[in-house]
Each structure stands twice: as C-alpha cells, then as structure tokens.
Image (cartoon, rainbow, N blue to C red; front, side, top):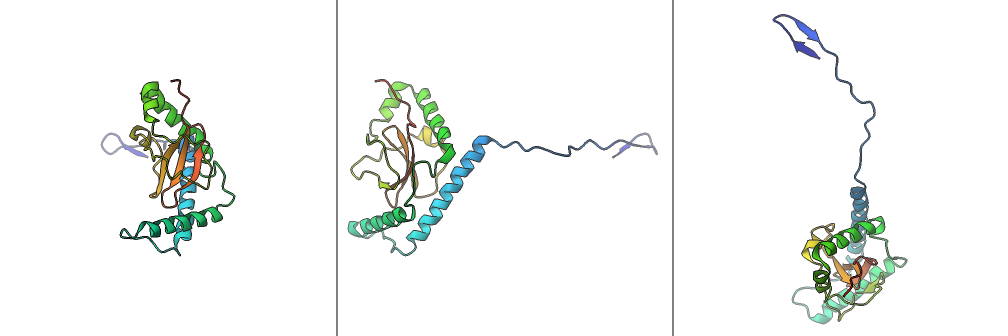
Length: 188
C-alpha cells in the first residue's frame, strides 16, 4: 500500500494483515428455523404434486364439491405421509416455538393469557395426519405471537389445540404437525 508523504516522496506501508481462516458464526436459531422452513417447502411441494390431478373447487361450487376436494386431498396427503409423526416438520425448532409462546404469556400476564385461550379447542393431544375437529372453533393465534413466529407458506396456519401449537393445512383440514405443551400451564 502506498501512502503519500511530502512532495515527491512515497512511503511504502505494509499491507494490513488478512486473517487466513475466518470462522463464520451462524446464529443457531437462524439455522434451526431455516431447517423448519426447508421442511415446510418440501411439504408444500409434495402437496402441490398430490393436488395436481384434483379438479380445483371454484368459488361458485356447492359445498359438496368443496368437501369432496378437501376429503380427496386429505386422503392423498395421509397416504403420501403414511409414516408421519409429531416433530417431522417442527423438528429441532420446537423449543424456539415454546419460548416464543412462553415469552408472550409472561408479557400478557396470566389473566390475559387465559382469556386468549378461551376459544381454543380442548382436544388434546392432537395427532399428525388427522383432521382438525370440524366443530371446533378456529381460534386465531394472537397477533403478538404470530408476529414472532416464522411466516408460513400460503395454505398453512398455526392454531392452538389445548396447550399444543398445531400446524394446520387449510385445504385438507389436516393437522400436519404440532408442538406438544407449547402453551405454559396457567393457574386459574
């Protein structure tokens, strides 16, 4: 590296030391959540492939046509994911989801957290590849929790069922995975 000195004089300065081996530090949560995202992408690709041969319901279709589509899609997903079990999609990200929900519960206080859970279906435990209960309320996950959870691909949604965080496929109405005990136990 050349540095200018007095008029007509140049001084040669040594080049800065460059580290031969730079270790890249990866946020462990980011890598874990990327794995979750990759598994969701694989699920969505599988679903798209399974849905390819089904006639798509139209907004003007009667309920029976929409139900037929949902039932047929659910059956295809169940067959394709025959060996699916709890944790296949959430994987090692489950503790992160529990932390997010627990932190929200701490910030809300027990009274507000209990009020939030009033519409949540009590059925527990959920099971992978089973239908979300038809008659159960589709209680929305509070926005302050949603904003902290990883964004889901279109057609998938988070729901609570009892104290479990459920991953639901809207088109098939299937529970595709869940995090058991995601909601901390509250004393009434």
